[in-house]
Amino acid sequence: MAPRLPALETFPPLRAWQRKAMVEYLRRRTDDFTAVATPGAGKTTFALRIAAELLVDGTVEAVTVVAPTEHLKTQWAQAAARVGIQLDSAFRNADLHSAADFHGAVVTYAQVGMAPQVHRRRTMTRRTLVILDEIHHAGDSRSWGDGVKNAFEPAVRRLMLTGTPFRSDDNPIPFVSYERGGDGLLRSRADSVYGYADALRDGVVRPVLFLAYSGETRWRTNAGDELAARLGEPMTQDLIAQAWRTALDPAGDWMPQVLRAADARLTVLRNAGMADAGGLIIASDQQTARSYAKLIEQVTGEKATVVLSDDQGASARIASFAASTQRWLVAVRMVSEGVDIPRLAVGVYATSASTPLYFAQAIGRFVRARRSGETASVFVPSVPHLLGLASEMEVERDHVLGKPKDREGFDDELLERAQRDDQASGELEKRFTALSATAELDQVIFDGASFGTAAQAGTPEEEEYLGLPGLLTADQVSQLLTKRQADQLAAQRRRAATRAAEPAAAPPAAPVVPLSAAQRRVALRRQLNALVAARHHRTGLPHGKIHAELRRLCGGPPSAQATIEQLEERIATLQTL
Image (cartoon, rainbow, N blue to C red; front, side, top):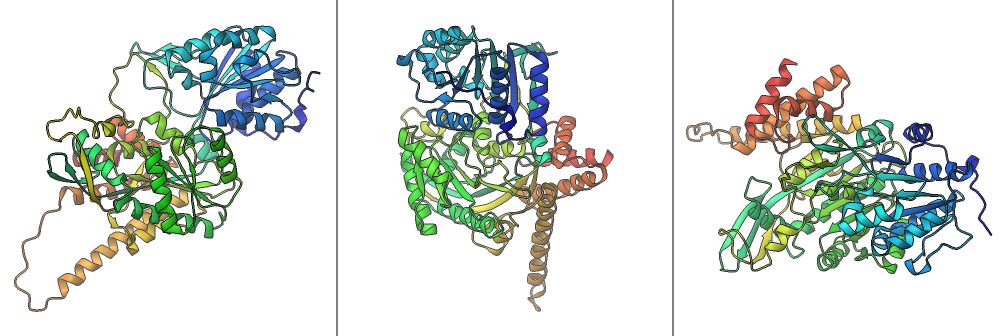
C-alpha cells in the first residue's frame, strides 16, 4: 500500500531564507537547484518542504536522499518521518527497490558509488526527486562522482545542498553549475545562498568566540637533539607541524590546561542559562581520542562519551549524548559534519585536519542557535593557518576549477610525516618524542578581529575571558571583548608603574627597552580593533566586513596573522576612510 502524502499544513513555519529559496525553486521549476546555507540554518527542513510540495502536486512520486554517512541516513529518515515523508534508511543495494510503504530511501555516496546501476533503475522506475546532501562529497573520488552522475541523470528533479566551502581540488561536482569569470576560471554557482553572516544577523546561529592558545613546546628528534618552539610564532611548516603535534600530545601539559579552561567555560555557560550545554573534543585519531577522554574524566570527574567510528554503536552513542545533559563528547571526525546536537556550545579543536572544508564542518557543530543570546566558544591551537580560518568565518567560498592550489593546512599529512621514515626536511630527523608543552591564552578571535594579550593558563587574566557571560548578542560580545582587553592592558600598566615606583634608592633607570615584535603586534592589533569599532558605530557595518574591506584594499591575511607592516598599513588606510 502506498504511503499517505505529507500534509503541508503540518509543516513547521519556514524561516525567511527558507521561504525565499522555496519561492525561487517553485518559480524556476528547473531540473537542478543548488542551495548553500551555513550549518545550523535549516537545510534539512527546506529540502523536506520542497520534497513535500513536489509529492503533493504530483511532480514526483518518490524521493531519494544521498547523505555522507550512515549516521546521517538515520537522522534524515527521522526528520522526514516527523513531517509525514517515510524514507527507508535501511535500504541496501541488494534490495534493488524500496518497499511500497515508503516514499523513498536514504543512501550514502559510498552506496551509490558501489552500484550506480541499482540506483539508476530505482530512479527510472518512478519520477524521483534526488536530494544530494553535502553535495561536495560527490567529488571525494572519481567513482563517487561518476556513480552519482550515472545513477541520478534520469531524475525528474535534483536538489543539491551544502553548508560548507566547496572543494579545494579540481574534481567537478555532478549537477552543480559552473560559470567562467573574468579571470577565465570556472566557479560554482548556487541558486540560493544563506551565509554565516546572514544567519548571525537573523539570530539563526550563535556568535562563535575562538580562544587561541599558544605556549612553549619541546621535543626530541630521533638523533637525540632537543628542539623548542613557541606555538603560533612564524616558523617553517615542518616546525609548525612538530610544535602543533607536541601541543596536542595527551601526555603533555598543553592539552590538560586547555581542557581545564574549556570545561571552565562550559560551566560558565551552564550557570548562565544554558543548563544542558555540552562540549565536543575533535581528535585526530582513536588512540588520542581515548586519551583525551581520560583527561576529561580527571579534570571533571565525569566520564566522556567517546565516538570512534561510523558504526552502528556510534549513532546510538551520539543520539544518547544529544538527549542527555552529559558534559563532554570526544570524537574522531564522526561528528564533523551534518550531525545535529544543538546543545553543543564549547569545542576543543584538537586535530591536525585544517582544510577550510573540514574546519567549517567542525565549527558548524557549535553554531546552531536554540534561543536568543546563546554563544559558542571554540578552543584552538594558536597556529597561523587555523587563526586565518577562524578570522574568515563569514567568508563565502565557491568551488573554483583550474586555479593553482596552495597548501591549505596540513590535513594530517604533514604531522603523519613526523612519524615516518621519509622526513623531507633536513633540519628535522625522522621521528621525534614530545617532551613538554605549556598552554597560554594568546588571543580571542571574534567577528574577524583579535582581542587580548597573552595570559598564562590558570591566571585571573585568563579567567576574565573564560568568564564572559554566556547569553550575549554579537554586538555585546564585541563590546565586552573590547572592554576586557582595555582592562587587561590597564592592569598591566598599573603593575609596571608599581614596579617602577618601588625601589626608592634604586640605581639610575636603565634605558627604555624597545618593544619586541610580539608587543608591537599586540599594540597595533589593539589600535586597529579600536578604529574598526569606531567605524562600526559610525556606519553600522559589521566588524568582519570592515576587516574584509581593509584586506581587499591593502592585501594580506586576517589581522590575527598580519605582519607589523600590514597592520600599520591597515591602520593608515582606515584613518583616511
